[in-house]
Image (tube, rainbow, N blue to C red; front, top):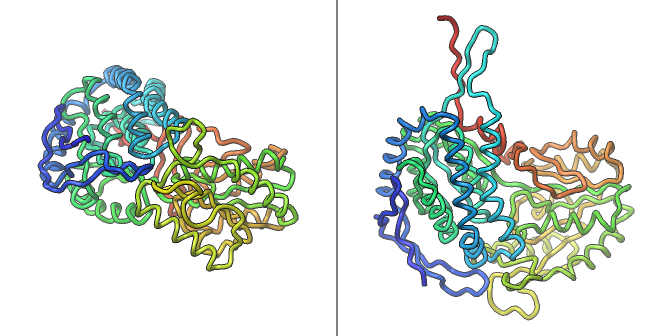
Length: 472
């Protein structure tokens, strides 16, 4: 049993002042791993004060000083990879391949940020003006439970690159993972106050960060309703806000695609991270004449996906994060059936042979209309919808008929045709015949999927302000 009762403030692990505690539950076994003492407003205020003091000096740090910090951070996180990986398996239930990828990605974020900063001109001449890119100031990094280490490190890396001290608020559902990351950060030996972390609920921790006048910037990843609430709260003090929010991503399989390859890849896109991914391709769009072929391939693919113990190397899908999330996904499966969608794989309840843990069967519906609830709302679980289209024009129209626009996928044997379709999709990113991640490319969404971008030059600039000086 672990007892997490410390916040990280001003370069030290200090006892959390908040009085509320919660159990940390292993979602695979429903057993208690430990307890977390939740931070309260007093903890947040101390963290903001420490970051504000550090910012006075950190804002004038040189590019070379920040590059050295980023390299130390990358080294330290790599040294802590086993602890981060184990926490991701135990606390989140990530299968081994996913846990390994996620922890290595977290470490790599600092190298990518260093590469970006090294090549980025912080001072440039534009017309008669000298333009200096300056740190925006103390930044609040609010991260989700479905990618704890990766979200913390990706945001932190570019904040450090820009010269911004931070207060990190991870989800309380990822406390052990966050603890492993902050121990690595501590080992990197940054100046006191540059990085602070408090773990607590949205109210009071997130609410205080969203309204406090000494917070200049908020970088939030999570649901669209929460992102809207943060943006509303932040506007009174004119905080800069970056929001990476909900997705309901389409995966378009064009009629010239190799279906034996494209369908399993589309299923993989939809079920990535056990379906708990904002970029999951949960709407699979297929040509109407090929529906029966697709159904057969889906049933074969889904039938071979192993769900269960994340310690098993063969496991592909782990549990949902909590009982509440499990029930949410079950409710959507029921709604899909009630609305008349045809269940072709999976369904309600746990997989056969599993009696405990928040496990969901990989579930696929066919005969889905784009106006059905399961096609409109983010389920955040391994539940996919197959929607048919007549031609490319209708495929694009269906794909874009969504409140969201985070990610999209296109499968075709003709790369030019695929790019023409991609160019018409309202999404922040489109992947063609691939699930490959490009860490230096901008990440973010159109419409209700967010505001701003993360990663590479765009991620760096989200923590910078431009000052133009003319004359002299």
